[in-house]
Each structure stands twice: as C-alpha cells, then as structure tokens.
Length: 226
Image 1 (tube, rainbow, N blue to C red):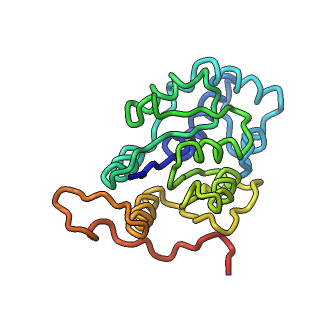
Image 2: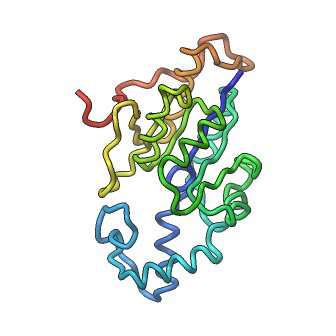
C-alpha cells in the first residue's frame, strides 16, 4: 500500500539560511547581518551581486556536505516512518551535489531516495517528481513548490501539500489546497490524519487501530482563506 512521503531539505530538514550566511562571512571576511526578511539571499543580507555570486561559488565548491540539520530533523523522519511511510528527499540542488546532500543527511534518508531537481529548477519540477513517485504527501518551505504540488491533486498525484511557513517575504502566497504550518512536527500529524482517512494507516506495535498522534487542530487549508 502506497505511503510515500516527500520532503524538501533546505529550510525543512537542514538549516541552509544560517549556514549560507556563515559561508558568506568567511568568503567576504566580515560580519554579514540580516537586513531584510526577503527570501532572496542578496536582499536578505544586503549584498552586491558580485558578493553574492562569490559566496555561491564557494558554497557550490565545498559546503553542501557540511550543511547542519535542524534539531527536529530526525524526529520528523522517525515520526513519519513510525506511520509506515517511506520518506524521500526532493531537493532543489544540482545532481552533482547529491552525494554531498546524502552526507549532510547523515543516513536519515538513504542516497537512493534523494532526488535533485536542479538549483534553478521551476516549481513544476518537484511536482513532476512527486507524480512519478506517486507521493501522497509533500512538505516544502517555498510556496511555489507547495502550490505546484497542490495543483496536481486533481490528477491524483499528491493528496496533501504542506507549506512550512518561514516568514520569508517576496514570495507568492500559498494557494487554497495548501495547508500552512509553522512547526515541522505538525506534518506527521497531518499525514497520519490523511492515512487514516484513506485507509492507508500502518498498524504499529503496541498501538490499537485508531490510536496515535492527536488530530491537528486549527490549521487552515491556506493562508488568508475565509
């Protein structure tokens, strides 16, 4: 029975923002303060185009394998696996960095279940991967990716598209059909509810049918919905 779940990595499992900023300070030889809440790194840290390009060159050369995981990363994946889910990573980096991505994930997701769609991939690229995987749920911190996944729902691709809201500015709004959360550990709660509703819940040792995580409360299907 299909219980494939897909996760973005940067901003969901790994603290890309803090690590990129640390790399910027090393490359530029100065403190790099955050000056804006914009999602675009150049605006966020008040860098020139030349400075930002220099940081990206250094990052692509040697930093992807060093990317630190959030404290919740293991708990999130284990909670999904406890539900009987197979967890895949669908990530917006170039395929040449796949081994480095696997190293940074420290075995939480095996390299064979890491799909790299490309550093400059359009939002639809992840939706296409989700379709090929027949994934039932997806978590990302970029609204465009969550929106594209939600748009595939009528085609029977993803039943649950979830946006982890990091408060970034300058991005499109999440559309209806996208569930917005601000705590990544709400995602397994939503997935469990989906699996129960669709009869795909896996029995767990020591749990009677229907037991488990409490239903998630107060989550709107999309931000700003009436």
